[in-house]
Each structure stands twice: as structure tokens, then as C-alpha cells.
Image (tube, one colour):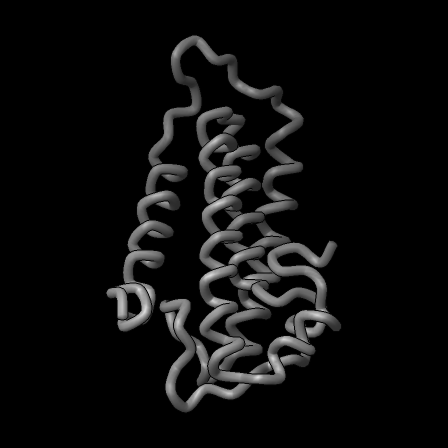
Length: 154
């Protein structure tokens, strides 16, 4: 068994924290890249707030099942209602949209590039998490057929 199979996914959490910190600390301008136009600020705020709402709905929907790690808790139950009837990983979706909104609000191309990296990271993390979920919940396979969106509903 590899460390990834034995653990709870600690490396995924560390990677997520590192990318989120890089987004927060990225300078608005870098290497001669221009700042984005002023109209990006209100759009970024709207996207960021929407991301926060989606992420909070995901946290609330999980209830006692919530864990920072991608491996489900031993006593977890499969949630398929609420926001989870629309998207399978709404917390990742919320964090991604919040990061994207933050980059737009700051008018920062470096933050936006790192936000895209975060989206790719979350897709890979969700794929790993789903292998654990399928192993724990045989019905997860049929859930993925009903709820097609892994991170985004489309």
C-alpha cells in the first residue's frame, strides 16, 4: 500500500493551502504584465461572493461528514441532496470561484493564473477523492451518473 492509500490525503490539503496562499500573496503586477481594467473589481466581487455562498452551502450540506481531507470519515454518510444534487464537490467549486473573484477584484493577472492552477489542482484532488468515495459507497457510481458536474455543474 502506498502512503497515499494509507493516509487521509494530507498532501492534497497541504498543496491546496500552498496554492491559496500563493494566490493571496501574488503581486497585482508581475514582470511587466499590466493590471486588469477597473471594471474587473465589481465582477470579481460578485464571483467571489457567489463562490463563498456555494462553498458554505457545501460545508453546511456535509454537516458531520465534513473533513479537510479528501478521504471520507469512517462514519461518513453519502450526501446527495441540497447543493450536492447539483455539483459533486461544491466546496472546491466555492474555493475556486472565490479565488477567481479575488484575482479579478485585485485586477491581478498573477492571481488569476494561480486561480486556474487551483482549478486544475481541485479537479485532480476530486478525482482522487472520488476513488475513495467509490470504495466506501458503492452507490457513488450511480450518483456520478445523475450529478455530472464534478466541480462545476456543467
